Image (cartoon, rainbow, N blue to C red):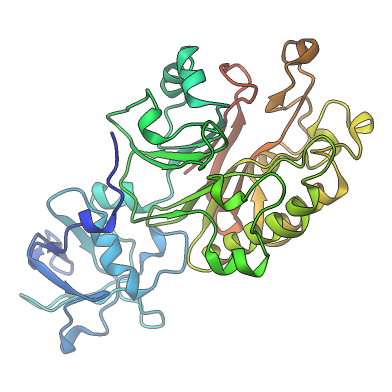
Length: 389
């Protein structure tokens, strides 16, 4: 399903008016919000009497919640109404209840939330990342639909799409598609397919970081016109698909990669992480450690395994991001995501792990599984996946 570009314009601005329903337990009430509850700016209507009534959302959200996010949370609800069981937490204001109907009593107990709200704002989801090396090619090979059927991603991040959205033969009714394609035809490009409408979509690197790191291009072109980054704000986190520039066989693009692209991209991820947790995934075009490629000694200093490129991953980890696969499989060998077309490399599993899913440390406790799927064909890369619980 093709997505409208202006995501926020499609979001409802009003919700049902609030009422209170008395529960079977006389000590607890539920707040029901429907389609006519007005919202102004970033917060719901407030009544002075209940300005200290606070709902602690920490059982739902993995990040430090702020009152300004309240309207965004309500916009994520796809059902007619939802219920909250209010709890009282004096020391940490989170969400202010409007006062209508009978008095409400507050108790320090977990929140009961309608499934529509939890589905949007909890962390439970499966994210899949795949460098398809041309989305039209992988579709012609008949490998794209079987991948979806097997992995069942909630969010699918793609790299090296090599197409514009209108050129793609893939149109999935269960997903909304967001594309960042290269200006150069048939080159590079990223996309994200998602089952839930995002709150916002961000294309490319921010212009202030482009200027700061002088990412205005090299002899190969301008990396900002190559569709290398796209980010979705899901409400509870940012999900980013990235295709890092290749340093080239003669290392002619290593200076841009090492001194410009890598620090600019990391600065962007750190900026997003200040707002909420981040999951970024894609083809980083580097094997981080000797365990991440079949022949580390023979490839020392070659593109994809230079000290400069590996240093970039070191800095990502130092900034508070977790290599999700190595977190759960620290010593697993022969775990690769890319294979050369030469000398039956894939058949012999002589490969490199250059496709990653990194997550903010705040999400570490939610990481249930991180996997590589070498049995899925169609590209010289295989998909990688992350399951959050």
